[in-house]
Length: 633
Image (cartoon, rainbow, N blue to C red; front, side, top):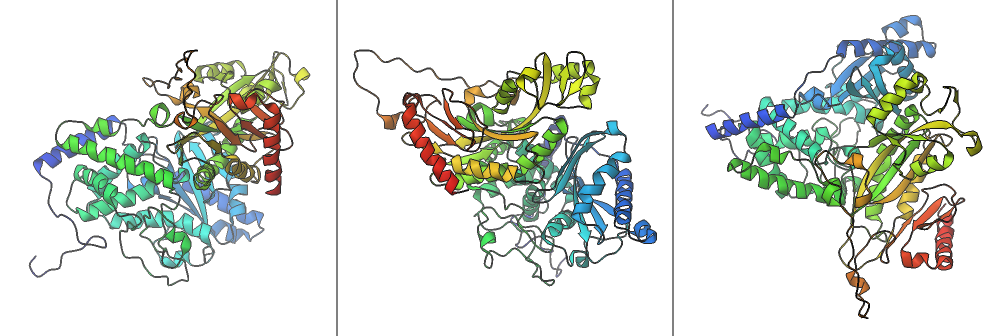
């Protein structure tokens, strides 16, 4: 109305207040159909049951602390959701991000000690297909799959409350009073989701565009804070900002504007949905002028709920570079879609991480003797694999331009007969890999396998421990488990050079093995160099082709001219032009063509063919490095 001030969405005026045209609405309809074709809509269930489990968990934990029965019975405990489920943009394969809020009597140790058995006792065992506590994560978490739905459960104890009831409102600032940093990160997930919904002009357009961005970022392998990319909330905040700049646009228009603006955004200028509130409770608020850590953020996307935090603090130079490339690609495609030359399916095409993007990879192998152990180690390694990539990128002497983690792990089951075969599996061998059909057959023929994952199954069905001498393993099957993460390496242009990743690998392995959840008797973690043509078949989708090893042309015998080393580039491992160092990745092994090993240092080095011809020189060089590594601890 005249004389009435228009509402401003966000921290600036809108770019356009135009309403959708008929062609915009037609594009939006086709976008929704494309999302439905990708099975992107679904409504999960189970909230009431989870509430009951949490209440029982709190009651038991209170009694374990010998609190009065009345206090234990009235302590309560609530479940809140956040992330994609809370925002209404979840799909059938989405995790349900869930927060367990409890009173002050319960701490983090109680959560990990009492919640798992409580949940399992109150639930049919067959309904739980995964249960993996990760206490060492940046935000400690229990990852589970319950009734076919993946649930990520985090925890917060409210230090000012002796009871927590269903009337609790997390939007109340008093809720966060007295919380430590971990508790603040946990509670803020729900607070951010709730406030974000209030800051977008049209929730329907926001949800359609966010669903599309979530699908696109997963398809392009640029999703997940733990891997150095924006997580679900960060992507949602970025979409919400575009909604504020185009307050009346439909979802398809928001999506098209998103790629162009994010590609041109003057990073590190932050993406914000509202003015940052100053601290009134003595809490740290994101402020790059005061804090060096905040100033180091490359693509800051700031959460709207007090206290404001950076939701993209894990982004690295390499992952940022990948995102800029993907924004450019997507902007070109949506322009072609608008012109009628392409379809939405072109935007959602699968990534080329394994088929084209890299020539060299690191395989980060998490090995365990049991399935449960594998799940625990997988969570631990996943929480640290970004640090390995970051260490490689930031080590100026390493010789790698960028290290890009892939956003999923590949879980594998292997059947071995002796310790040598187990060692090969730890080193990445797929010779003993069982596909899904073989695993199902094995489970059907050995019912005890599901109970004794990782045990030695003898020919008569008896079961013994896996740790046996080779001579005691004859005629027995050993079932072992791996989860493998991949990091794609990009090398700088120019002449061939040595790639030294020994120190970041050593730091990573030390990190993992030093965690309380790591069991040195049944677990192992290794980092192995893998060429693109050596990648396992299961990383490729139907229709994708594994890269082939290039054949070198033979030189004529008469020619005395030799191609300069500078023109060779980094060639195959084992060729004349490649030298890669890795430390702290394998147990004691004898000299084998291709690597030098020492059981005390737990190290090996991949070397070139010419260098292998001079074993004495290799040994001397390697022991110098060994001495250096010992000085570093």
